[in-house]
Image (tube, rainbow over all chains, first blue to last red; front, side):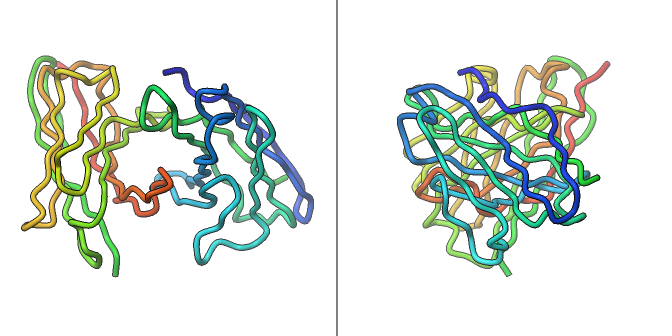
Length: 110
Length: 118
């Protein structure tokens, strides 16, 4: 199972909005509403930020939102803050394997 | 509080074996599917294996199939990963994680480092 495709890096200034894309196929992202997003700070375990495409777990700020169109899912962070600087990973259920991750995107807050 | 704590990592020679453990607390362990996910140094996340709440359903990534065995002991609130025939490319931080019904991992341990080197 190939990894989902994410941009290697994105950047934005404090207060701005950024979007990270996650592209798959009709066998994963496009075929199911089981897309999740994780935030990982250096040396720390990943943290669930979005599940089922657009749902936020309790405690995750509403600055974080998720969406999907066709085979591409997106994570949008609005009102960017310094503490949002981290690596972000998407994942999806797939028809051939229980889960596949994206390659990860490094977010830099300028 | 809800917590997962991994242990058992270390340095092992190629071809060797290692058994990882994950101790769960703060939730009803036997109600949840559990999974192992790994991250090689400087690389992304890779799903390794998952096991159903009863242990009756198990899946493995192709990269570890036939070499790794996942298991659980619900009486001890523990998850395990037996790793045999280890290779250099198995070097990674190994995380245990709780799986939601929506295929999302909502609780993660702190990870345990496995280094395969001669």
